[in-house]
Structure formats: C-alpha cells, structure tokens
Length: 350
Image (cartoon, rainbow, N blue to C red):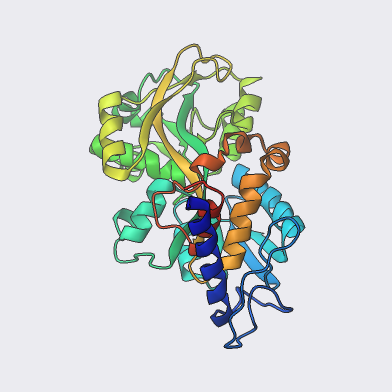
C-alpha cells in the first residue's frame, strides 16, 4: 500500500509539471508539456529518472577550492551524466547561501547547515527581517562539520584567549562563514565578540582556513579557527611541519549555544589528527542541500535520486561523501521540495 501511495504521489506531482515553467532556460520535451494545458502521466527513462526538459542551474558552494566546491563539482558531474541538466558552481558560504538560493535569480541550489536553514525559513537570528520563504530542502548529506580551534600558543581554552587578547593572533575564516559565526556565538555567551577582542588588541584575520594554516606555519598567526568534516586536509598538512594543540570548548557554555541556535555538542575523537591525544569537545552542524521552490519537481526528483543511488561515485571524488546515507537524506530540518519528497517516498526513504 505504501509503495502504491508513493507511486500515486509521484504521478500526481508529474501531472502538475505541465503547468510549470522550466528552471532556467529549457528546450525539448519531457515530463512537462511546454505550457500546454494537457496533462500527461510521468514518463521515466530506462534508469528510472523522470523525463524532463533541459535545465540550467547555478549552485552556491563554498570558497573556490574548498571542500564544498569540490563536492559541488562532483555532484555537477553526476547530475549531467544522469539527467538533462547543466550546472554552474559559484563561491558562497554556509550563512549566505540560503539567501542566495531563496532569491532564486542567479542561484537555485546550494550548500548550507541545518541550523542556518531552519533560522532562514523562520526569519530568526541573522535572517531577522529577511525570512527565506522560497527555501526548500533537497537532501541531507549527513556530513557533520566540527568547529575546531588549534593553536601554537599556550592557550588552553577560549576563555584564556578572551582574558589575553593582546597576545592572540587568530585566523577565523571569512566574515559570514560558518566558523566565524559559530565562534562569535560562543563568544557571545562570554560577553564578548571577535570585533571586541580586536578592539582590545587581538589580531583577528578574516582569511580562509587554508590561508590560515599557511599563516600559522609562517608564524603570522598563532591560532586558527575552522569548521570542517574530519579530516581537514589543510590541518593535516600543517601538522606535518608545525606542532599545535587542540582547544576544547567548555561543555556547559557550548551546550547553551547549541540549544539556542540548533547546533549539536559533540567530540572530535582522539587520534583524528596528529598531536591530538584526547577527545575535543566542540560544536558541530550537519550539511544539507537547499533549493529554490521554483525548481521543477522533475529536476528535484532526479537530483535526489542521483544522490541517493550513486554514493560510490561521489565518495571517489570526495571522502566526505562517505557519510551520505539515503535513510536520512529526507531529514533536513525544513520542508522538502515536493519533487525530492516524491522521490524519497517512492523509494521508501520516508
């Protein structure tokens, strides 16, 4: 019965495509009827992908050359092999991508975190007065990205850094990036901020994580703040030539931040990196893909299907995809795009 209902939903979804325009420029014929009033049953190719018009999408990833950018390129290759879609990658960030995708002009798809997506759709925190009403979820990638703080100085805690700002030289990532925002939210519980520490004499550098670890090797900073899955390649490389210690967050303080903003408190397991002999308590969040609600249902259906059924191809491009689990792809914290939901239900994943 569940399979019958799921198939019925998928068929009903496809019937509505006749009244919808294609995302981006489109040509040819597929599940849609090119604006005709006629409604047709969904048609699928020999691999189970829904027939669709040619579509052009832009994806907001992370900084050029970063993990999200590489993962986005892998998904681009997969999508173009699997369906009639062409995708362009543009640089972005975890906190800015929801707004870019919601606006839907030049960007229809992007990476973000569950906490950001929830805040964006509810118009809270950084999105107050700028609620993202057109933002829907495509897939949970199940990639947990941890806030990490490493240092060559004698700091044993963030509180120690706050108490000694004049000796702090820290790379925190670009403004508006997930690591900068997460660290600032922790500092907020201590009654301060990165801007306030800078005013007190700290050298706060808003540079990328890879640039930060180059700077720490060159002696230009003594501390780096990052948010990434395990392992972070630029940290592994830096540790090969520069010993660093790992700074844990105070559990009670971190849990307050997690409760407010929707993060999780977790541990970077001991031995994840060189010189890391014990678990490191910290904040983390989970990576999801978000999509504009105007993207055609057939396109969203096919992208969800491609991700769920081609894990091995994605893992060969980036190790972080090892965490991808079709059983949790629908668990995104916000409303799913109808096309993605139709796929998950038809595949028995909801």
